[in-house]
Image (cartoon, rainbow, N blue to C red; front, side, top):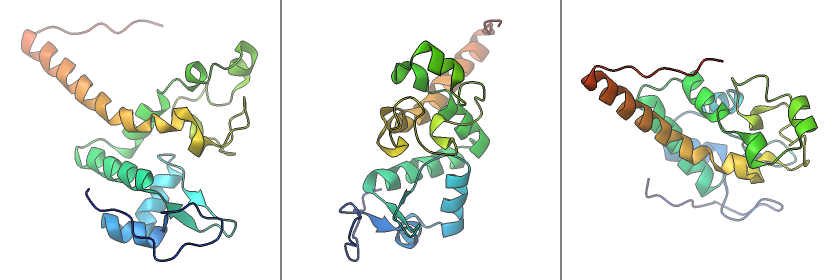
Length: 166
């Protein structure tokens, strides 16, 4: 997507260059309800003002474009969410051993760490939108290509990979 964000007017307390959800939906050619669903599914975190209005940066728009690309490539929303949940937040954040065992994210690998109810890191209290783990979401889309290539190579060679037993 080559478009740049054109915010209609800058509201107090909103970072520069952000646009409202309706403008984002129009720019992406999708409905506001679709964006809300992606958020409910834990695929991204919207920036919200004190009134709850959602705003989107250029980075947010690029991520939504990438989500749409993955969905059009036949990756389900549950599949994308599972890929995102594989980002090892506890290793990246270097959580303490005791807090890693107590973290509510670790036992449930169906959602990425930022999809926790509070959207707040238990270890540091940092907001997830600014966390380096959340920023890694852009790299997840390449995982499908790596898996596809590996599976195609195995199929062509007549071999199967053995999954490590747990």
